[in-house]
Amino acid sequence: MQTIDEMIKALSQATGIACRPASAEDLDTLEELGAPEMVVEFYARYEPAQALEYGPCICPIREIEEMCDGDGVESLANYFGLVPFGNLIDGDLLCFNPELVIDDDWPAVVRVSHEQVFPDSSELDFRRGTTLYKTSLVAVLDEMVSKLQKK
Image 1 (cartoon, helix red, strand yellow):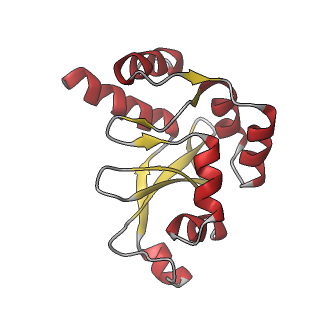
Image 2 (tube, helix red, strand yellow):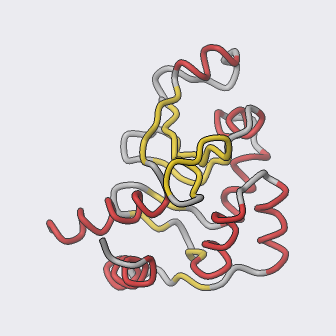
């Protein structure tokens, strides 16, 4: 597996989307939304200037904040302790789960089904529609780079 630096460089070159350090204000916002330290550290170095898409999508902090402030499934996910950060091509939401750490202190990435979870879902229905997607953001980046290399 490549390093995070190498993966970000490859994705930035392929998509034309720059990744740069987030502002201190945006990092504070990310912490207020419940993002774990590893996620904040990632964004402190590699925040995408706009949504970084190559299969999975990784959003900039301003978009994450808008997701959490809205009245959709994203704000429901944040209410239930997850931190939404992107989506998949099929419309499913991707979130960090700070309570589930599997891979080197990184929070696991879970997938919230757009076919099973709605803004008015109960917590039980929300949990039923949420599954493990990847063990970490590093694994998501690796998937994105793998898709890039198959192109």
